[in-house]
Length: 74
Image (tube, rainbow, N blue to C red; front, side, top):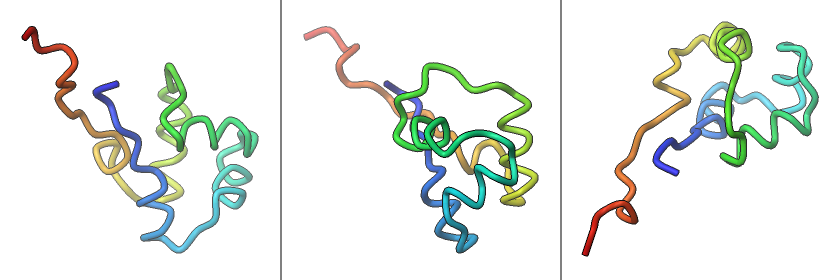
């Protein structure tokens, strides 16, 4: 998947634990874990907004586009 989720990096920079963030933004730790590991297929803008407010960051600090080399024909 060409979208990387750098939520763990932002949590480390803010010295915050996943369960603290989950509680503050109102989602379960299981759903936050799915997002952190990149297994989520989508994210609601309201969730992204809440994450950015709590971590005092921009969406681009959390989400990153990378080229997927598997899409290149040989």
